[in-house]
Structures are given as structure tokens and as C-alpha cells.
Image 1 (cartoon, rainbow, N blue to C red):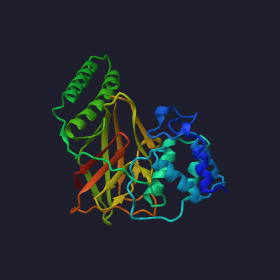
Image 2: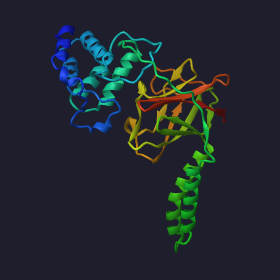
Image 3: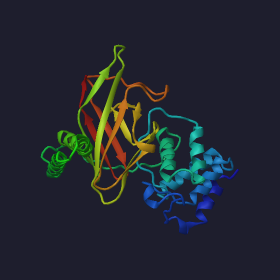
Image 4: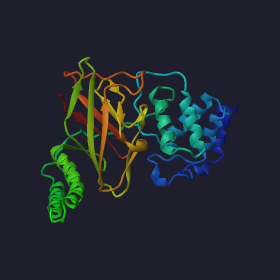
Length: 312
């Protein structure tokens, strides 16, 4: 097997590549929130094939992250530490080396290793602005959009048949319902992305089990595509927490784990909590004395949304 010194020598032999940030041939540069230099794929492939042992690969990646050759978003370390690398992480490295998955998926696996304490890297402190909500019912843009949709719905009434009226108006009525939800909601910002949240209802079963479905409406105000990532329970940039403990989502409707938000386009997602996605995770139980937050941590910005939860 290659030693750690040999791994470092591979890095040192190609210093001119360090400043280049490229992606695999299967992905466009804009497809990744954190792009990883292509030449690191050789090391990932060797590790997946057993040519490099675990400790050498981890030490090498720690060095690359510490020297900003691989840039990983700031990651909080969980209290539940692990001592061995899960097989799925090595599989992910092999798939990434084979151009089957994106840079983001590989970086998510590195974040997991940092989170469970297997990998240790210096974490630069991020200054997160105090979260404040903004009233949206008087937002001129939303008012204008609502008025335009109402005018289109009125125009649909001039159609010849009831079927034509329905087909014409139903599309605009759905859009208007979302705009009106945004006007009733509180707005929070994570960089260029606006998040709209309206208080959610908690359902408690006769057996005492809790369930809540949170609806978020988002608009990307940037000129470039921005993404929201939630590829799995251990690699999700949306965290449900009471400040002391966090819970895994029960379900979400983010397509393929990544929602690519086109500029000035409105998106809606649903994410629920209660029964855990897998048995090893804790079930969430509603506690009226606790304050809950939905924290979103993306490369373009962070936001902590205070959740107003009411028992149904």
C-alpha cells in the first residue's frame, strides 16, 4: 500500500495544478457548489480499490482540506462520534473517481467524516448575521405579481366554454395561491436566496407520536443558479433542531437531493419530521417548552428560521 509520505509526494509533484479548480467531464462547472480538482480522483480511486489504506487517505484529505485545495463548507462536529469509516463513504469515493457522481456528493461524504470525528480539519469561523424576519404582505413585487395573476384569471373568464375557463384559470390560481402564501409568511434570507415560512401545525397521534410538515417557498434573487442540497439523512444542509439536539427528516420532496433554483423563479418544498427515516435515528417528539429552528447552511449563505409550531 502507498504510505502517507507517498501520497503527499503525489501532491507535491504537481504543484501547478493546485490553483486549478476543475470538474469531471460529466459535470459542468456550475453543477457543483464546491468543486474539487480532478487529479484528486486518482487518490480516491486508489483508496476505493484498496491500494491506499484508510489512515493514509484520511490524512491526505485532511491535508488537502486544511490547505484549501479541497474547500469544504464549515461543518459542526456531532456528539455521536464514530471510529470506523462506513462502507458507503468508500463506495462514494469510487463512484466519484469513476465520474458516476458529482463533486458535491463526494464533498458531502467528507463533511460526514468531519461531522462524526473521523476526520479533523481546522474550521474557520463563519460570521452568521442575526436572523430577522421581514414582513411580506406589503412587498411591492409580491403585490404586483398578485395583481397580474388576478388580471389573468379575470381574462380567463372570457373563454367560450367552462372547460376552457377552467384550464386557463386553474394554472394562474395555483400560482396566485403561492404568492398569497408568501405574502402571509415571514421572509428570511440566506445570501441571495429568499426563504418564506408560514407557521406549521403539529399532529400528535393517540399514541403520543408527533409529526410536522414544514413548507418552504424560495426565490433565488441572484443572477446565477443556486442550489439547495439534501441528498440523504447524513448529508442534508437543512437541519431541524432545538439548539441542543437535531433530528433527521422523515421525508422531503427535493428532487434527486438537489434543488437547482433558476434566478427569479419561485420554488416550493415540503420537509417533514417525526418518524425517523431509519431505525438508528431518534424519533422527534414535540415539546411545547422547546423552541425549534430550521437551519439552512449552504455555500451562498446561512439562515436560522425560528419555527412557530402549533398543535393541530
